[in-house]
Structure formats: C-alpha cells, structure tokens
Image 1: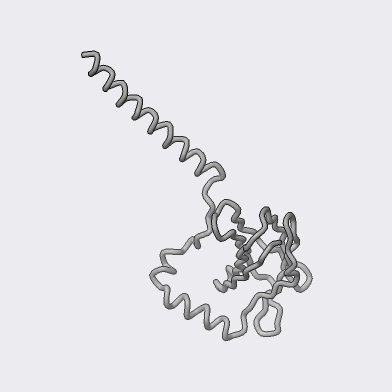
Image 2: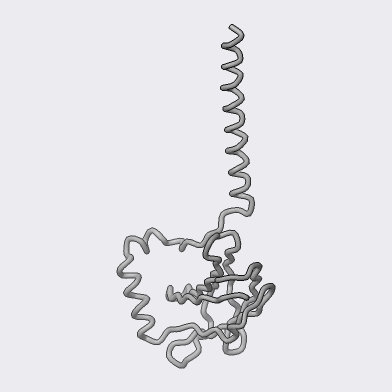
Length: 153
C-alpha cells in the first residue's frame, strides 16, 4: 500500500512540475506581448499571392521606390530619413511604415510610422544590437514594399 502511495505521489508531483514549466514558458514567451508583423489581410494576400507579386512588380516598373538618405546607422538611437518616389517625383501625404527586423529572432522587431518632413519622411529607430538588420519600408496607400539589409558594426 505504501508503494502505491509513493507512486501516486510521484505522478502527482510530475503533473505539478509539468504545469509549472508550461506556465513559466508561456509567461516568458508572452512577456512583451505579440508583435504584429504579419499584414492584417494576410489571408487574402495568400489567396491572391501571384496577383500580389504581379501588382508589386507593376508598381516597381511604374517607378515607385524608396530611397534611404542616411544609410550610416549605428547602435542606439538613429534618425532615419526616407524619400518615397514615383520616378523622380516625391510622393507627399503617404501613409508609410518601417518594419525593423533582426533576422534570427523577433525579440527586437519594431514597427514604426514615418512622419512627413520637408520633401522626405523620417522616424527615430533604436538599434539595440550589432549585426544584420532588415529594414522594410511599406506604403499602406498602394501596398508597395521594399526591403533593405543594413549591417550594424
């Protein structure tokens, strides 16, 4: 009978430890909250993937592009200045965002709105680690996006 109580106690202890470990894993994983890097209409884009790629290629052929004016980014706070153009024409009054991603993890990812300045858009971004970063500039007006890779010393 004592052996049965010990076995039951061990099983109960195992379940309690599994519950605590699962709780701790979720607590660590959700500490900063979920990061929304996926387009809100990802399902529609997935259904129309070929059309989405074709539309973006058409926009590139029409001359839509982003230009980063200050490519010398360093650790810490950086002012990023961007020009959004169609051909040689600056496009004012656009709704632009910047997605800053660290390739190996999403822990440092940021989504920033760009504000309009004089003939450019700007934002302040905080780069917390050296290495390779991916900057994706996106126009919400026509769903045009362009990515840049930046190496931070």
